[in-house]
Length: 544
Ligand code: VG1
Ligand code: CO
Image 1 (cartoon, rainbow, N blue to C red):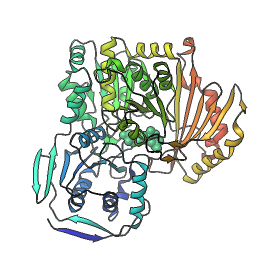
Image 2 (cartoon, helix red, strand yellow):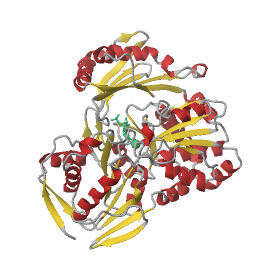
Image 3 (cartoon, rainbow, N blue to C red):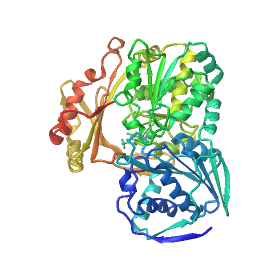
Image 4 (cartoon, helix red, strand yellow):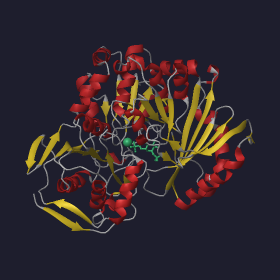
């Protein structure tokens, strides 16, 4: 294999965010931009000679081209084996599983997740380590440092690889394996859930469903598992063909973006169960006939019912949630005597707790739930969990949720996003909030009295690494909270996220509309952060 060393100059903006490097496709198309970043990943690793790398993406525009480049750089950097999903496709949870199953050194996921795709939209790249999870902060920091000083990269002079035919080929010392992207993942799901019960419940017509793949990666996974293996009628999976531009939409599973599904679920034709997933397959939205389950509630309900699922029958060791996620799961943990951890936003912070066996289930308010079966959040896993739960309890989604609230109380929750805010304005808002932190405790706003106000820092209980500046929290004496943070996944300006939650123990008040129930907190949030005043926006761009 002929290997060339090519001179390059560094870019100064290759700092990975909450989940890898995300930029416009046009940014990635700049001379050596992708090459620099990939070589910087490899420069930050030790001992890759002869090891295995997993490679795949969500199929968005630039996926195929980027994979060919990465293959050549990986070959030149000494990997012994590349495992690549057919067509260059692999969902994020599937990459995580394949890294673990084949004991790979790591993996590269090409995705900008829920961000739109296409020639003028977003692309992304993320490195996962040998436990299958996103690289920890100390790795992404080192990678960023390397990217600022890189002077050359290595490239193997080999032809483009045929990505479309399953099979193994050998190029000198390098073996390239094109695999079925779904098979290993489907096999894992069959080990976790009661597939016989699901086949029965679906086959008998007790359980009918609609899954919206949003023209993204879960199309082939959902078709195989839900329709072919579990027997859901053809057409149960909608928007099932992955498209390079996701059909022009945001592949983001919430009621704002999964419109077709949402309309169906709130119509007289609604099936028992509805769900959607995002661009790279790690997020999920859970719905039932006439009900939307907030991701925070979904996590709490999973924790409370884990014993009904074969893989968790023997019990779970603990739970974790990201800081802005509602405290619903904390109540379950308390009742069950389970450890409960509060981590910063981003799946990488769950990795150590999962590896160490301190938690089994974890989740984020941003439509992410998962368990120790992989080291990423997992959209279809969450869907199968709920289907298994419905089949076991033989109750509707609404009944399961309402019973849960009756037992534990309801954590009324919503998130308001102000998108594409000028970066200076957004930083000004955060500074303004920081400036108020010291004086907030004991202040009263209408019915609410501030109990604490701080900027969240996290010390990892396993490796004791500390992560600072992870969002501003304002807690009230009745347990309500407002959290402010800036997104780390956007590509245009800044996105301010405001997370609002209020605990309602009284079952007679559980049917309230969340926006209404939270209206006083929404006002207080504006009073504190002045986002409308400072950005000139009249309200949030997205509410979830
Ligand atoms: C968002 C979510 C966060 C999630 C991250 C990656 O990050 O809030 O909870 O882990 O996206 O999800 P941020 O920094 O924009 O708030 V995904 O599906 O993009 O891999
Ligand atoms: Co995602």
